[in-house]
Length: 204
Ligand code: MG
Image 1 (cartoon, rainbow, N blue to C red):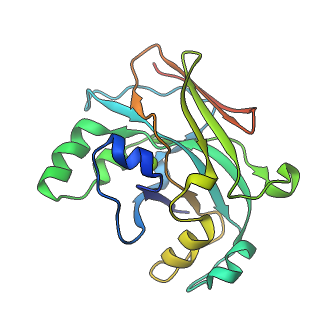
Image 2 (image 1 turned 90 degrees about the vertical axis):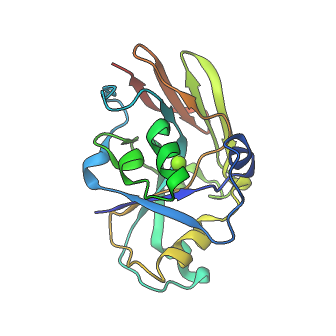
């Protein structure tokens, strides 16, 4: 199982980090050891002093596919979840300045908590019109809707599968809206999908 993550997929988030809007879809990988459950605590590691939360809609791949045409991409997923793409922003900024890979900043252990999955059928919503929010200590910090994505889920699947075969159980983090910020020990993060509580983590 692999975890693919899209970077820079919401324009207001691109602006808040002073990044450029990319020409192509930007993606990176997290190892399977980054995955945790959405109700587990997050233990602040000692190798960073600036960790950001990034709340994202996560799509689970249902079957193997390579070079998936965009018009068939919908056949490759049926469930979504919410996840946090924890990012060591201090280390990422240092690596970005040198043009080096982000692997450590994004792929450290427990950097990818993912909630339970819900079926799109049960949600009865278009995947490109899903509301999701993140609260930090009870305060709304991220308020997104998947209609604001620069690249749709189907575009992402068609694009990535040209280069990397997608397999059953693979997860795709689809990018974060604006409002990313730091976490400190004692903080509580809670994520909601269409108003339904999905994920709750205490930072320890
Ligand atoms: Mg992200």
